[in-house]
Length: 258
Length: 221
Ligand SMILES: Nc1ncnc2c1ncn2[C@@H]1O[C@H](COP(=O)(O)OP(=O)(O)OP(=O)(O)O)[C@@H](O)[C@H]1O
Ligand SMILES: [Mg+2]
Image (cartoon, rainbow over all chains, first blue to last red; front, side, top):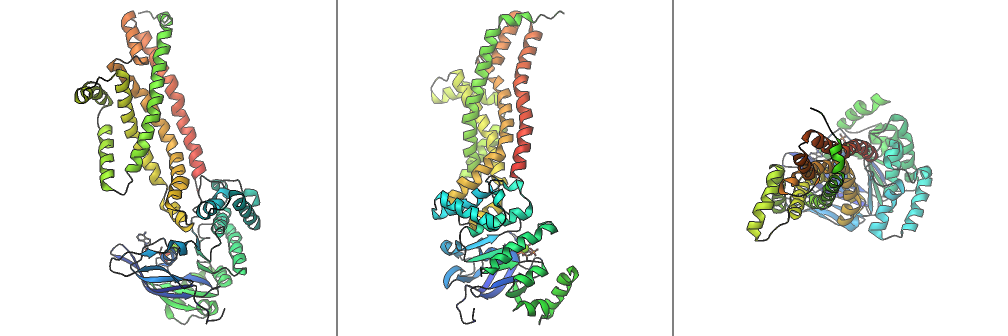
């Protein structure tokens, strides 16, 4: 992608607080181009999850705007004004959460076909066929009829990714999707996401895993105190950060693990 | 004193009939009461404060007063207010349904609440419209989670149903009392009646534990 291409996501002056006292995002500006894989890093409580939740359309915002593919998506005029979310745009974004959030009363394949059948009116048989193909690709063919409680954490997370992909999203959001996993299960989930990256799926990823960040990112954003502190290619932000705060964070958080 | 259980054999048919009345009454009020409880449970999570208020007044009132006085009130006072005669069956059904509605609404309210915010987030992220969220995600999980407590509620109702004997309904308790009075053998008769109640309630209470374990295991994520 050239820098001249139109942005996929454009976040402008985004302010978000929880109640009157917890200001989380304080004027965030991010522009994401099509095909980019943006890894967001930053200290705990810095608002990374909040950012992804806003982009997913799960949160009200105080002020600012988000556009998607050139279309207005989320906006609020500020000062108690309503947050306006275009739910049609929202449907082209998929998200995977830290704690799986599969539907526990439904089997794996039912989890996958629920939204395509109910939202897009797809025929059950066709949705099941697509679901089985996806499960096959993710090494889960044998688990199609299992219930979430019968799966390992890594399997659950792969099912959650497959479930989101059933809707052919134009952007995928991953919020610390391997943080709740036992260490030996992390790789199988990261492999699946790397596989998606190989197909040029645009993504926004929050992770604390340095190896994964380096391998998946086409761009890294360091967020702290509710603003973007540093934004650049992974070699810069992870390897030779320009900002003092980024350097401190990378030294403290990432280098201990290596 | 000497015990003579053979008197009970003479009244076998009456006891069976009484038990059948008790079971019928319980089943009717389980169905009516838990349907009512489900609606009230929904009302207690409704956005409208008025709806929530009315529902809580009902629940708190029926949970905070003895079932016997509720039954008496419906049997003696309601006909005076409405100006219609109520059979003892009708007042028994109304009273126990209202009682069951109140206790099961709490059960449903808790189970609706236990379907957490993360499930809602997943619904929104998948673009599920509101009615699909409710019918395909929230309700099935809420009902599943409610099953063990609902079973306990049924056991409570089964036991409380003995109160209808006080307004002259010929249930197991009523029949037992009559036999005991007529034969002057309260020890034998009332013991056997108690054992009949126990023989039905006990397996049910055990089932609660079993079912609970299974459901929790299924819903664990
Ligand atoms: N629903 C909420 N209500 C109130 N405060 C919240 C809520 N969600 C998040 N917060 C607060 O907002 C701040 C930012 O939270 P957020 O989860 O976005 O941080 P994060 O960068 O994802 O942190 P972590 O690395 O720990 O996941 C934190 O102080 C958190 O306590
Ligand atoms: Mg977070």
